[in-house]
Figure 1 (cartoon, rainbow, N blue to C red):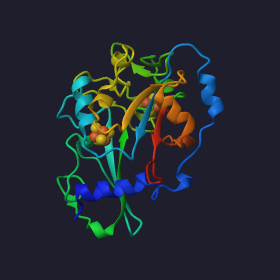
Figure 2: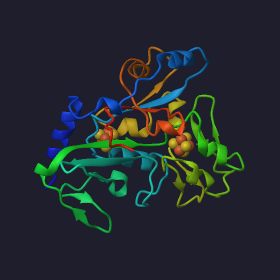
Figure 3: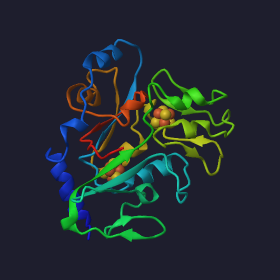
Figure 4: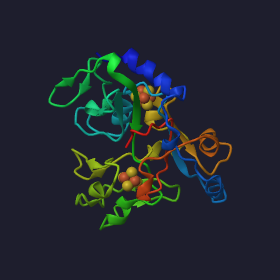
Length: 260
Ligand code: SF4
Ligand code: SF4
């Protein structure tokens, strides 16, 4: 049987560096990042520390309330995935309701209200991975929009203009990360925008403010003194699906090779 305590204990193993294969981590070229700081204005980036996430889901709740995503709808701008790797080499992943209410302790959610029970002694490692729009520097969602309703700002955030969106869904299909969805009330494309209305006023995103564990941070890559920039410049960070050439601007610490 899986317990939250055992998950956290195993997550700490990862934090200790035992469970993260070096092959899963890639070093970023600091010269490319240094070039960023010569340009004007902020360049918003995000840092997720998977070693700190405990899967409480407070970030998901905070995001829904802040960004008018109906609380009970099965869609969300950000979500948390739980990965349980068992000793037989299988990887089990769940994210019930995007982890809005955390995770069941008695097993992996396999849908339709059913749980797959996994005993503690079967578990190799377990951890949580928060996900959100990567605000890609080369965003395919922008390229496929036929009316220019989704666009990239000078400070690097990809936005959706609800007034221009015609609801064709091309961007939802074009995003390789599955972060876009139809807003159930407005019937237009919807996704995380790093709480643009907040960060441009000097505030944190709602999910960062909601996370008591420091697993999420937003930063300005053009400020060399920004603590997030310093981490990205000096530590081993990784991005999701780098092979797609989308140049994600959400960086991960402690990402394990099982994460897709
Ligand atoms: S993660 Fe998806 S929605 Fe976000 S910028 Fe990249 S392609 Fe677009
Ligand atoms: S609030 Fe923080 S610790 Fe809780 S699930 Fe979200 S990222 Fe993880």
